[in-house]
Length: 186
Image 1 (spheres, helix red, strand yellow):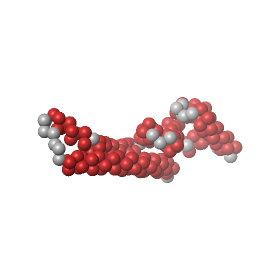
Image 2 (image 1 turned 90 degrees about the vertical axis):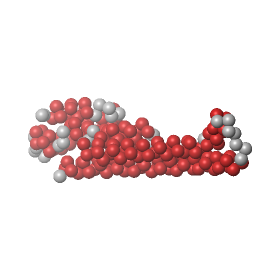
Image 3 (image 1 turned 180 degrees about the vertical axis):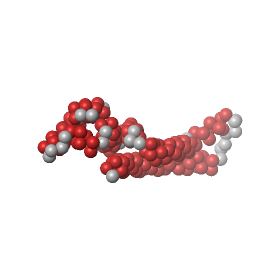
Image 4 (image 1 turned 30 degrees about the vertical axis):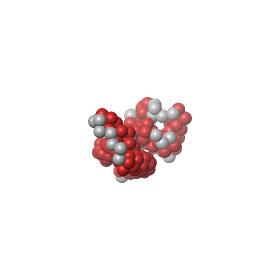
């Protein structure tokens, strides 16, 4: 592979990056080639010392997705960051995706419990109407209202837990990229 082929493949791998980012990366690699050639290395030696354009592209796409997730915290950006990091290796798939599935299931179950608790007074009334067993005991309604409070508290806890998970995911993804980059250099 020669320099032109390398740079063309790299630009194709970076196709989904914003134009300014892609231009910046391409300029850095062209400058790197120029510096190395001025030190007397030929383009084949320079390319031999670099990672493949595909690997460089995946790493840069993952970094860009993580930065995007940091500045625009929502489910789309974090999923995009996770998916970009998954492309970097099979170990990422095991270490990222499997725990995320369990955390997602856990949070979904907590949301259902919180919703059930929050709607408990309504469920108590509906149960009385359906079963023709309407209760006039005030303690039942007081318990239902306390469950509503517990449900609302659970919603707050879930929101805080989601923020914590979001930060942990971003930290892990940054660490994962550094680890993969470090293992590739060694």
